[in-house]
Figure 1 (cartoon, rainbow, N blue to C red):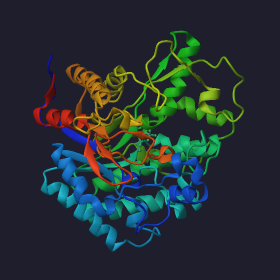
Figure 2: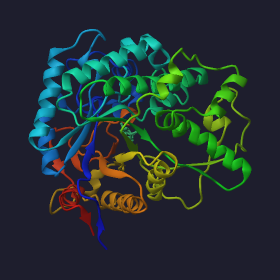
Figure 3: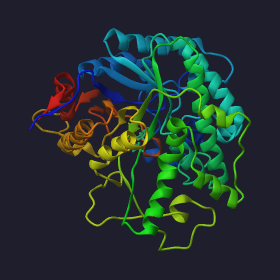
Figure 4: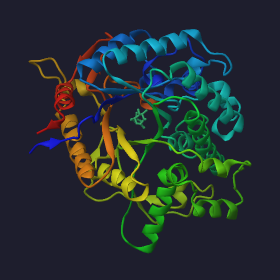
Length: 456
Ligand code: BG6
């Protein structure tokens, strides 16, 4: 059976500056700092080996060969404004040349402004807990619009805005590895305020492009319909996406969260004018990243965590019997979750224009799948994964969801935070020893899909 997609669907891929560009000509970020101080926490002690800073023409060439009509990357704050004050001319030249070559190949340029890459100088000011950092980042965004406004088609203030908050201040995955709900709540507030400020400034420029944010809309699925499990999933949803989406689309903030913070004496600081900001100009587009659902149940195997860590205080994860897991990443594979995410936006968030901004599967040791005849990685599992998810995207569109595109994560295998190059997500293999790029079997599949607008 044919699965078809609307005309002018955005077909392409997502990547990010910090995961592909390397550290030449930019200032230190939290990732460089951690790698310098604690290389053992990175898989096989490996830092970014990609060099899109120099090799961007090849990246563009591959995007074109794969028939992309759009590509997302990010502009690194640490590169454009290494000390947070002055603009680097080299950075302007680099990004302009990169974007121009995409445009020459008729590939639309999608740019995120923050992809987990906090510069160290900004971290020392308090990172997202600090209003100084909010102001400095808003200034960075203004500079980005001035320097690249003529080349970029879609802007995204943040990639997965909840991730730096939970990874930095709740679950200890990113520097500074703290457990501090009060900092997490302040960062959550500051990040949505930053988003609103940038959107408002953008709307006061003459730029005709669109602006939005990319969020990992991971549906929170309760184990059962019991009152307790439903309450657990309501809390999981608040942290996962509701606080951000309510603020950014509906202009409100969950009362439940505010009441909780007041009751526990960890209410964050709200500045004069913050509430008004929420109801000024609104964003145009939402990028939906989807990898896995969160299944939750009420807390039953332990006492509530005294530090209010969400998955040990409000709910706990529910390992549903029979669920399918990608063992390499430990994430559940549940294609219907992408349908649910898109329908959530349709039903609860004014059916705002969306596109799938990231979806994909990371697999370790793909060399073992090399086809002896062709020498290419035979990643049928990736093709199946994409097809199964795209069928759900198509169904959501038929059911009225305003979804306008699909970007695979990712096209050329890239570095992935603490997992470095352990799990490969690409449709193009990156050989760390020879630095060569080689298409996998999925490359051919996507190339045809992106050209034809359908698959069988
Ligand atoms: C998303 C991020 O969370 O998922 C990417 O936007 C990331 O930066 C991708 O690489 C895959 O996750 P991971 O942790 O396996 O690299």
